[in-house]
Length: 101
Image 1 (cartoon, rainbow, N blue to C red):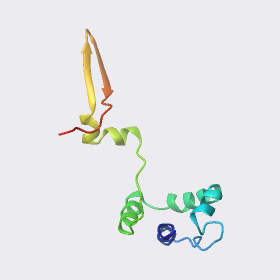
Image 2 (image 1 turned 135 degrees about the horizontal axis):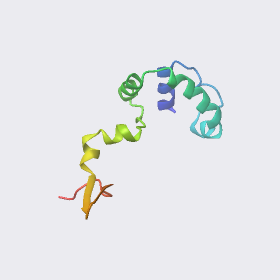
Image 3 (image 1 turned 60 degrees about the horizontal axis):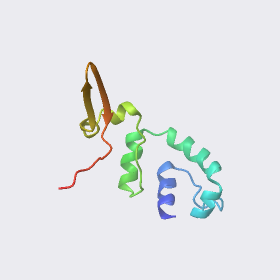
């Protein structure tokens, strides 16, 4: 509930005291209404601003990336496996993202 209150303050919306959204159980029950409110507020903000401020307020957050953004990352690029069989070259993604040392 405290993280939700911090998020509401960051988004400058005063819904955390509303009985429909006051507690996690009620937020889940009213998630469709909540989604409309949050979506409108979040869309008005710059992504980096929102991510930085959520992290500063210790609000769990993560950016949803499109495939281009994912594969522009050097870690993701290192997981691309290329294989040639005859004249056909194929690429696939490694299914294991970590190594045991």
